[in-house]
Image (cartoon, rainbow, N blue to C red; front, side, top):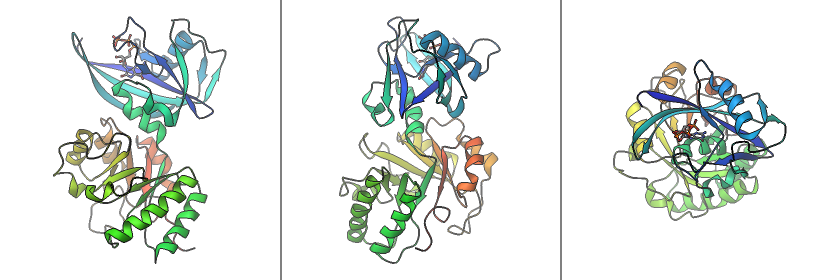
Length: 319
Ligand SMILES: Nc1nc2c([nH]c(=O)n2[C@@H]2O[C@H](COP(=O)(O)OP(=O)(O)OP(=O)(O)O)[C@@H](O)[C@H]2O)c(=O)[nH]1
C-alpha cells in the first residue's frame, strides 16, 4: 500500500479509566491492546469515523469527541511497512451497553496502569497524552527550602499536577535534599515531580518521577538515559532538538520560547504558527513554554500542544 493511511483513534473515559480493546487474531499485531477506532472511509472526517467505529466495535453511541494528539507512525509488518496518521480524540460521552459485536475483548484501564498493558508500540504518545496534565509548573525563585516548600504547597492546592524542580543555584547536596522533600508533597497531592538536573544526579533521587533533560545535554546522548518506568522530558528550541527528543524515546518535550519571556530576554519568540508547524509530526506530547500562563491554554491546545509549561505563569510569587 502506498501513501499515508488516516486512522481515527478514540479514548473513551469513564471514572478515570479508559476503554481498551484487544486486537483480533485476524489483525496485524494480534493480541496487543489498542484504543477502539480504525481507518477512515472515503469522505469521512475522523470524528465521523470514530462514531461509526465505536458503534460497530463496542455497541456504544459516542459524542463530544475532542482532539487529544495527532501524529504519523510507520508500522513494520511482515510484508512491508504501512504509514498511518493517528488522529486521536477523547470523550466521556457514551450511551448504550458495552458489547462486542465483532468479538473484541474490552477492558477499562486506569490511566496510571496503561504502561502495564501490552499496547501497540505506536500508542506510547497517546498514553502519555492521556496521563500528562495540561499545565506543567517549573519552579521559580525562592529564599530557602522552607519557602520553596510553602510555594509548592500553594501551587499543589491550586491543582498543579506536574512540577519541575529547576534550581540552578543549588549545589548537589542542597538540590537532592530539596527534591526529596518536594516529592513527598507532590505525591501527597497526586502530583508528579520531574527534576531538572544532569543525568549523573538522577539515580540519587529514586523517589522522583522523571528527568527533564536540558537541550545542552542532548548532543552527548545516543540513547534514552533513564529507565522506561520514569518520565523523560526533553527541553528543545528547534527542529533538530525535537527530532533528538524522539530518537531518545522521550515521554514528552518542551518547545520554547513561544512568546517573549523575562527569563530569556535575548531569545526570539517562535509564535504559535511555528510551534504548530514544528511539532505536528512528533509522536510525543509537546508543552509550549515561554511567556505563557493558563490564559494561553486554549490557544496552546488549538495548536496541538499538550498544554503550557511556565515559571512565572504558575509558580506562586509570594506567600
Ligand atoms: N484502532 C486502532 N488502530 C490503531 C491504534 N494505534 C495504531 O497504530 N493503530 C493502527 O491503525 C490502523 C487501524 O486500522 P483498522 O483497525 O481499521 O484495521 P486493522 O487493524 O484491521 O488493519 P491491519 O490489520 O491491516 O493493520 C492499524 O494499522 C493499526 O495498527 C489504536 O490505538 N487503535
